[in-house]
Length: 456
Image (cartoon, rainbow, N blue to C red; front, top):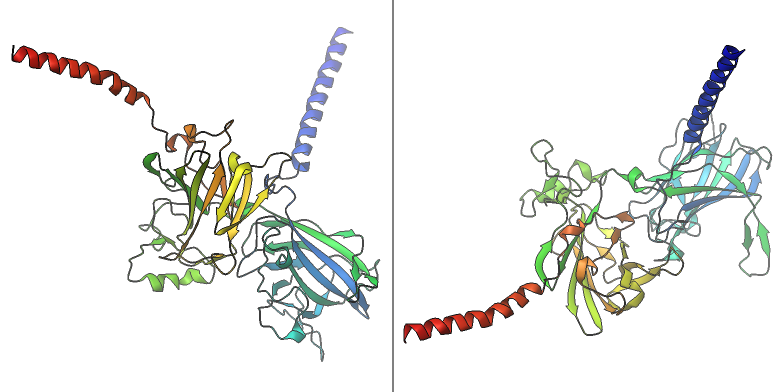
């Protein structure tokens, strides 16, 4: 009986081990990725809403609206590109406020030819100045969408689409799938379309509500890792109490490698600079940066400028080293514990971000419209700057151990590379002065004694 019991026990142990391994593998595949999570904007996303406003003999007419619910991440020129895959053999008969980049094969249609017959259409916004009969509300901005905090009225983009060869009722229509959003490059990952409560619309006279026939939403989130493997900005530091200027970390965004990769950077005094800027990479918006030790397109410099009795002042300078990019509607997000006592900011707009209740240590800064909201390409004018005045809090304020420098900085939503903490400008120690003050009388007495002995 004992050998049989031992055999049964061994079988149970093996079965348990197999079950644990199976559960572990299943859990690995079932966990969702958190690489798109932003701790400073945990609910930030771009929501794409499809509102079917009417049925047609072979399909429907819908208004597609994109809402940029991200607090500080915007979509700049050349704008967004939206794509999806049809569930069946749908076609796009017409569009208002946007267009597809390709028509596709519409040879099976005679007479009335659709706008697009591709299984996976790609849609772009129309440019400003489009004729009014081709526009709808919130369209035709060249795909540019502002962040929700900077300008919520311009954080929306819409177009109208007429779909054929599709379902004509709520039960027969099939939702598109495999949504993609480029803004303008990669970085966004989109979920599946989900049917939601139909949208309600208020008429112009504000006396009547209408309702969409059907509504579905698609949510897209951003990941800096998906956008590009290398950083796009770095931070340098300096202070009035130390002559050391801490530069951006070497090779923070890449290394100079003109030997094996010609054209990876260009010197500002290069006679062929103009031809390099308009070179092959211009159409793809590939950055052409000035040759530096950090090789970042953008540098943010934080200078602790002045110390007053009850206040202290900081100067922030943003420099563009990219010869191919003008940063429109730029913004900066800075984390520092003294932002709860920010008294005055000069020539920048300011908004407090509070991702955590009761903790006010994060600020969003952006340019003043028509003054410095455009960070021009690398060159003499490729920088913007401002000063911040903080009130001291006696319980926390200090210049020691790098407290006066930011904890983290984001430019246009991308995390900038900070110098290592041990490289921060240090506060001069007062001990050398104490040693000098003690030695000074001793040296004076010693010299006096020598003088007396010499002339005794």
